[in-house]
Length: 206
Image: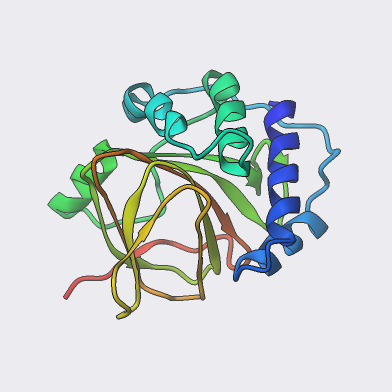
């Protein structure tokens, strides 16, 4: 686990120098996490989505030597030590959410009560199976994403859909509506919340 936290710190250090929209959020994370703190190690738990798709997502994580490839390989070595779970911040019970729930897993590494405690940021990995639609949703938290493995189509607000691949990053302002659709590959991301850490995910209908 310490190796993965070290990789996280290195990843955010590189992201803070990137000049992308997410650079400010990455620097905020570096400045507001005690990276040397003793880890609170929870009991590990896996998920069928992780068993089925994590290895494939990590195999499609960009060229060797890239930041995305490096952290994907580190994740693979410690995945069985992590507490993977279903996302629990949405209370919508529509049939599309039921499908998503069976095909989506998340692990939190930094945040309140997480392995690396922080009351300023909330961060971890998400894994979405191939050919799965994450319906329009929003939250009060400001959110940054980095694509680590696989590919997908993404939409923010009413802007056109765009494709994402390893190495890409996306920033969502507070309450920005966003949608994700995976294609033939599973999608592995790093996600980061830098405000309103207790936000619920609000599924947007209509």
